[in-house]
Length: 152
Image (spheres, helix red, strand yellow):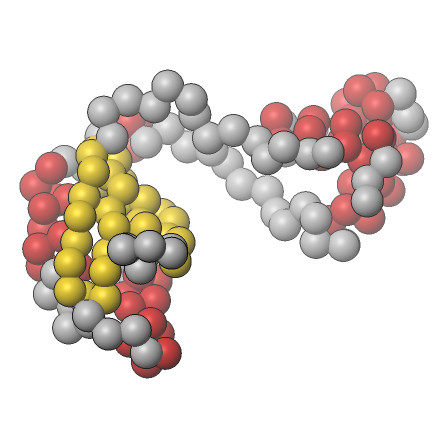
């Protein structure tokens, strides 16, 4: 699907999304304009979905990270839509996945402290009429940070 140059370009952009065409060209052994065209082609095809800054949660005062499993009481389309709407309104929920197995959703949550996490769980998640059960796990350490996607 990708040639070796595309793979190298994608890996480089995952390390530094602000790399200039000149810098990418040097890494790839191409001219700046060739590197820019390759990047543009990958952006237009949707392989590169966007760029964003990676922020330091601790420096933002978000010292508690948790993974929260949520099981819904009912599994209809409307219940799923209502719960997805709730998730979209909560900035603390930075990502959410629907899952197989006992839990229906896995949420990644950042809060300033344990009290804020407790309020979110008790007053928002468990208070939602479609939620049957919540199981939380607080992150103690992250020995491997969020890594770039493997590109083959």
